[in-house]
Amino acid sequence: MSKLPLYQQIAEEIRQDILQQNFRRGDRLPSVREMATRWHCTIGTIQKAYNSLAQQGLIISRPGQGTHVAGSPRLDQADSVRRAALVHKAEAFLLEAFAAGYSPTEAEQAVRLGLDRWRALHRQLTTWPQNILHFAGSHDPALAFITAHFNRVAPDYSPQLAFCGSLGGLIALAAGEADLAGAHLWDEESNSYNIPFVRRLLPGRRTALVTLAQRRLGLITAPGNPLGLTGLADLARAEVRFINRQSGAGTRVWLDAQLRRVGLVPTQITGYHTEALTHSELAQAIIEGQADVGLGVESAALAYGLTFIHLTSEQYDLVIPAENWSRVPVQSLVFWLETDQAKQDIQTLGGYDVSRTGQIQWVQ
Image (cartoon, rainbow, N blue to C red; front, side):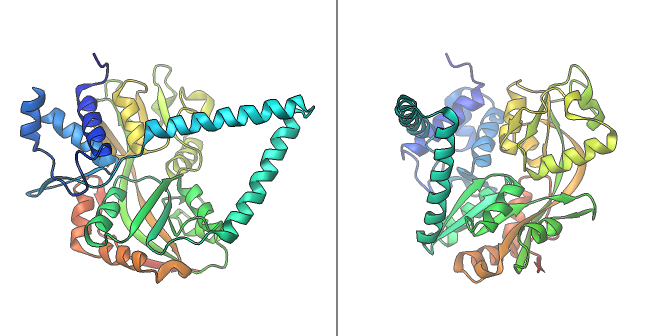
């Protein structure tokens, strides 16, 4: 018998059905009542399973329209096998190098130099298809609606999302490895979001910042907040296990600045170096009991039925260099963000202020 909570078992079965194309893009899933009857569980359990799949960008639910498949999941198992095969090949190379008398340091340097040469050549030779929109940057649950938007109204265009943190997204733009980025980087000196970082990392490049939303950020805890947490100072309590976001994430940039303000250092916080790559992953770790608290967006807490303690509101922008602005998929996205439908979609997640959604600011 699986040790996973029932809602995760249900979500995984549906995910596998999508992977095996038993459910295809656009197919309508059974209603929560039908699924509750099938699984002999409560409607709330099914809703939690559907919320989990929505956070992964696999399904879209709308009042009065039901729940539909948005796309295909990542091939996690196949990807694990593929990576294991690569490790075996790397080990074979190392054994051959060591047998030839090279040191581990020399082998490591050779691989790094080879990668540098390949990356330079790859950038010169690679021409991306015009129908692919490469996104890199911070994770946000609302980005699932961007994928759904293209699936619905622009099926000839395909967004590719890589969640590498706000700083990682801007670095990808600077390196020419993305068309647009997602960022919510708070600058302590100017008390503003994103613009100072864009000017530092993309100097001299005219760049548009298109607001996705203002989102509520705070502590996410187990239901009912059993440890009675009220603020960041509580993270230093001995019994509290924290889970952090990865280095370079905008959430972590804000956290580190606030910890300095309250006089805390990372060594005082149990779990500071335990990292989650997305807000969904962070919330799941808490609901599975791997951590007591994390810093994340309210929409992730709501999706997993967790308690949220609001600390601040932050601005999440899409960062688009001028040379990519006129591309058809970019203009389609910007136009959609200005519509009432986009604002309604984002608001359904909870924890968002969409009063500035779609606003454009140019930075030089």
